[in-house]
Length: 355
Image (cartoon, rainbow, N blue to C red; front, side, top):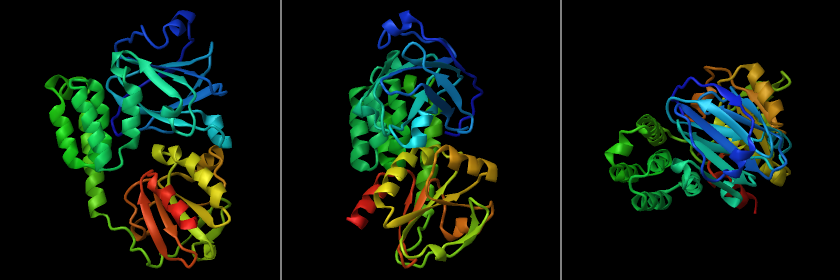
């Protein structure tokens, strides 16, 4: 999210009385948001970062069987929660995109794996989050009009719930007409209440996403992928033509991009699954070289990497309008498809391509 909020993240001890009331009877503090995670995973440390400042990560250590941290907050915004060491070795890695709301407490309990909280993680907390498990599942799965209608049906059945504000972004990105319907369902106390700033920001970003998507022209399927030569991770020149012979994925990403990082576990799985048939070339964008190399090392990305300088013609040549963007290129150097955003459809394409 683009909202700017001054914040302070601090790890605090979990007291026995708080754990006894883990799923209920939790109380929030004005101007603060608290997250309590009681996970059965073996991790001892979680990383937390606001999505508008992904490099600003705080480590939270497991104490008395749970992770607890509090953030000073003036308005709702999104955060990423990682188990960093698991991401590094690609085993039981996960990252959660959650919404922090001032004065509320979000709890999470169970086993979290592969970005699929509904497969073993239950949310709860203060009243705002009482149905967050369902909201989270809806939010993560809205990819088309049918999914958006499911979100609308939920909002109709929960008229007056502030938590419906969390559906504005995904519904707006995939079905602008359904967004109007969703907003019409919100009573003034929700639309103009404490979630107003969050809702307005989500509307603006969804509108920008749709407009960009409409005006962007993807590289024509079957056209020859524009050639380039860039500096690789070892400081050596690497050309696109030198990689012909296998299918190639150009992954345009950056260390600052939360959705790019969230997609790494699936990227690693598919790289291992098809590495005899494809190569991945990480195209780092809008980074310093230091941040680029640090991110490659931190997330243990096993494929090839090059650095795209700011102002490079490559951004225009490949119609880059958002991150991540993945361009699939045939062994002959022709464009097969382009996928913008972290979209499950990309992996379906690979399965169909190599079946």
